[in-house]
Image (cartoon, rainbow, N blue to C red; front, side, top):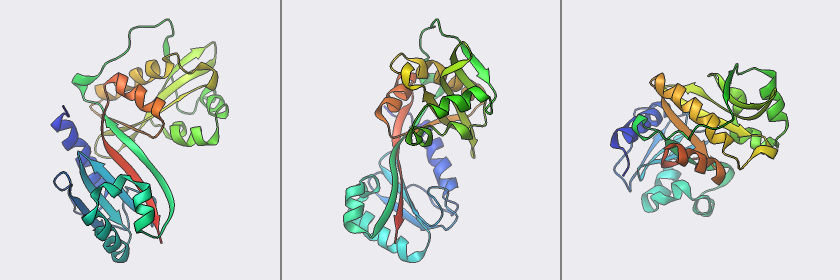
Length: 239
């Protein structure tokens, strides 16, 4: 069962990032607000958040807000369905949908101890740059490891990083996680080992760990640590 306090805390984050007075409605309903400064999406885009079955959406102007209300009133599930949005709106680029998962302290499930230790590295350590250089541009964008503000928790072989995880401190006491594993080291549980150390660090600081991912393998790592998927984020360029 979803932890209600976890849902309330996650909802508070995104309500704040909407940058206008708005609250998530009841499950199955949608709330749309005009917010040119919304943190739910890139500037000028439409942002669509689902949490606990409720939808919160922001639009950069009244025209696009009204288009969005029309679609979501009849079909709230379009907030996470790109095909339905494309059929109903003049859509350009799309980012997502990405699953949003959160970790409650009492749900944290670290892995058993492993031979691979975890070291803390500063976020600008050259070994992390070397790791990101070994993956595709798409993987770099998904991981977003270059934006962390916490230490990087890294599994190393010698001086080479095999997997690393850290987080960026977001508003409202949130830790937005980033994790990346080297191509030749995947499938060995190293991401889980690194992410467990990052999760312990974030929880000790009283932060809400948030795991945002599209890739199934990344979502499985989060689930094994005790993260619970509560919703989705989708950003859409509406002409």
